[in-house]
Image (cartoon, rainbow, N blue to C red; front, side, top):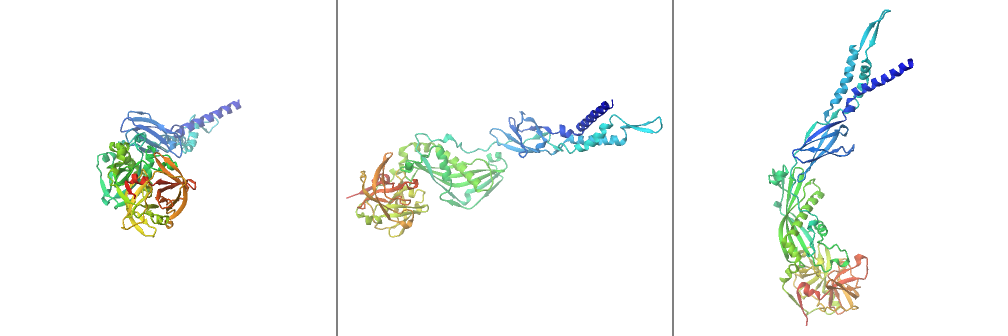
Length: 567
């Protein structure tokens, strides 16, 4: 019987402890989470709760009914990021923290406090007189619960969370998304009938008053042009060759406007049009913590000639709306956004599309050229004299070579030698070491040929080109030019015509003459000093020795509209 009584007492003790723990640990048991209601300003808003990143957990999509939705958030997360999304509106996020006192925690404190008051007041015990004399204190049935509740209750206040979330949160109103730039995806892909096109140069030429910043309170104010502050920033700013050309050409490559063929002949005899852009003004629109760049720019389309545009217009490009921090990266990204959007506009213009599809538009400038007539009277007649008819063509980007083709100083060179719009800075270094200014006359990218003229009057040694289309394989030839370094001007190397290569509807002369960077535009001559071709390229950069190419001299007439009068 004693064993049974001990077992009963043990289970009674366990039940007392269990009940005491429950009634004094409400926050740890029932107060671990809270149903929270979110109210949006608009209907059909998607609300997502993202848990504390440091703790981890899955995001929760709040089930919305109209503009209200309720979800259970866990106190242990400390905070959630609440994100609002709606198509056509700017996304917004807020943080909700556990900053309200957890009511269950008050109950956790009230239970042990009540138990202690019950015990101290003696309400849980009675005094009984013994028959033998004296008295005995008898505890009531609630005494064990009060004793253990008062003891364990104070320990349980260390469990559970003291703070919880608000019952309800009113989310901020979403603003209409800012107008963004052109859709820069496959919608801009080149039509099969259109010519290839590339961006040759992006210049920046901004006056002091053409760089301005506007400040707006909200996107609505921006759309209504209601700024609260305007200020001019910076001085005049000019860059002849900016870094943005490569970024725009990357887009053109994606849109199939640029040949992605990386073969050796991919750059020879280009029939592409090209574009020049000049940024003339920048407006920085600051909308809260976000920024939109607005670029005003001048766009010109050129055909195979570089002296006159086929079409020109002025456009405004908008960047995407971005969080703005003053770094070179963010400025560059916003500039690229706006320029790419303007480029997409330019390509979508009907006039530009027609120009790219028209052969006659591509050759339009050539029709306005006057035919230049050069006599062969006084031309070089030996290899020794031929050296004096070859010059070094120096530009800010590097150097190449050139061939004088008239007594008054007209020079034929490769277009790619002067291609980066540096015609106003071209210098000519003669065989005598004189440095002379030269002006750009005309060019034809289709043939990779350009024509310059020495500004200083003089009677120069010059070539008379071979106007025959016949190319004799095995003929001994000499390359004259400035390989690698300007100090090596008028270097002569010898070889033979190895072959002739057909590229499209045209021919290149293949030779084993040693050719290096800097030889481009120089002369390929025979043993009598007759100009057989204009040195164009070699395979050195491809790891191949002894193979180089020249543009046949008879192409000069058609490419640059020159008439050589030969006696």
